[in-house]
Length: 421
Ligand SMILES: *Cc1c(COP(=O)(O)O)cnc(C)c1O
Image 1: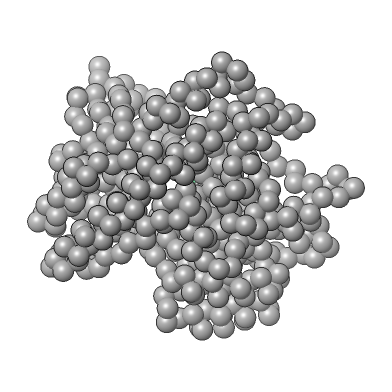
Image 2: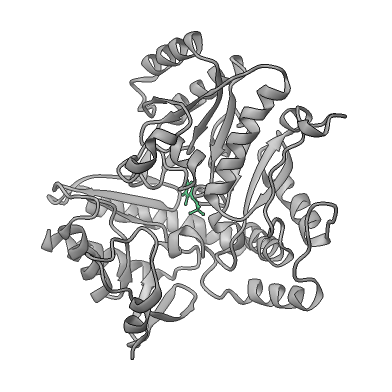
């Protein structure tokens, strides 16, 4: 029996309607930007396996560091114990995070890092004796699949069964350069009539909303408003963190810095799961008290797992290396050239780019999980490229180590797919 066949017996895949999509592709090996399946087909991983493996799959620098760490210390409870990989990671991260970030809290996936950010924002006010119960979020945001994260996510197509159980959230549109004043008026109205605890947002690029990009000035104005009203700002940089926008963090492009930042995905270079919620000294101090109940009573078994910390440390070193920084510049320039070439194509409605993230919208209506989308997905795979269209949007978020030739193949395949829509 093939892996594909054996898979069907006991496995239940994420974000999958198994009656409609019965088969999964069995990947047996990955190296650099390439994936290999059980039938020996080869695919360029042009979305870095959900934006995680930015330094390439099975990166030898990361795997060898983790392999050494494995001989030394595998796992230890992080309440009451500590270890050098976590300490060193905190030291290295604080050097590159926005200046106001001082403390780092560990967890193990992006949704949970947002969940923790929300809990920090709510308890911050609670600890100060103020009950604030409303959150603000963008209309099309995506922040994960746990309850708090689902509540602030605006993409609610799949949230139907759970909506009655959500936190209370007020939504604002993303700033487009023209609606900035209207957004501030809406915020003013919300702040007058509600007790707002926090604002949760994806800075500059909203991943699951099909790489929707917004105006940095407008976002800055929103963040300033929040600061003035003591609304805790929670930047979900789970996707945008670690170089995607051309700077280390999307928040580096914006003057007003968030109180809290959520990180995961590229943090460990895709080797093992880990997430972080970082915060300013002011947030931390609201929990620092003689009263035990004012602490943050949240923890996970694998918090700050030494192997994950080591993978993150190696990844951050790579991110800061001249080689990777040069690759990022090269990819940005290359996308710009491709954009000039493709943007006037009759099948292309619009294009956009932030850093190494490039997206184009097709000039056709398409359901997010419709049959045309499936046809495009299959076309890409048949041509050796793993791209995952989101509705009528095709986007690239390739590993930083993608070669010129591989990137050309990705562009050419996108150009070819335009002929079948
Ligand atoms: C992927 C993602 C999440 C959720 O992370 P998981 O690790 O899948 O739980 C949250 N926010 C953003 C912006 C993401 O891209």
